[in-house]
Image (cartoon, rainbow, N blue to C red; front, side, top):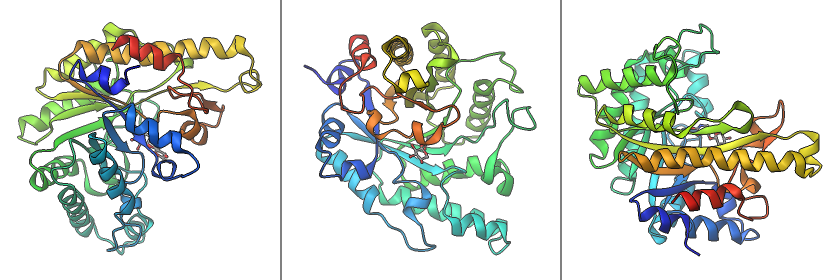
Length: 345
Ligand code: XIL
């Protein structure tokens, strides 16, 4: 049978996965490595390229895991999505506490960010296809204030100008890498008012930055969906990709997964509750894939982990408990979503 990678290639589409380096290195779990190598044409480090992983101690970079991922990709002829240069989460403690206690000034913080971006992008120059330069810079309608705004550590400490800076520094360090802005809940436009419609806010932001000559090449739509939220339809999602593409940028689905509420009946194996979830999950994976295939600018479709055996969802979404978010189950059996993606391709 053909892999997702091979089928994607026929459309010029890379099908990728996030990779958990611990799982990849686990000699007792050879299936993980085998499927990561054979089913996908692109890989993303799930955590290994985040700042806290790369520079846990100030001034001391630990490249081992990130290098391994890049080497794995090279051996398997896969492209790499670099993730992530600037994000408010998974920052090293020395950095956040230094800012909190005033020992790192704003000016020094900006310089540290410039150095970090330059160091990381330079190390992998020529080896990264797409970089997520800035991740999740925009708030959500449920934040306070509810009017959409630039959120998080970087905006609070440096103001929104850090976004333009980050893209310029990344471009200078590797002029060939495609530079992405990446975010969640931007799969489909809503009201079109940037005060409450996150994709519209992102659209306006990217448009404004590009008008100033800021080198943004792509918009990454993460695609973290859930079966309990009601499905998007393909036309809505296609329209969103087309609207982004009209800015002159590439697009990609960068972190697709579809979580489900793990009720007691689901956990007990009750198929009357499990089957509709598998069905809805497949439908959601498929909507994003069909949209991506319908829009030329959509370069890649990456799942955020491919197996429920190694998924961030149960650890992250606990109230209520959620899971079943990947296209393979915990025993590496392909689920309905996997077959659905294949038939879409
Ligand atoms: C998640 C990882 O999957 C987890 O292992 C980690 O504990 C937290 O981060 N959006 C992103 C990703 O851009 O980097 C996040 O990854 C998931 C949400």
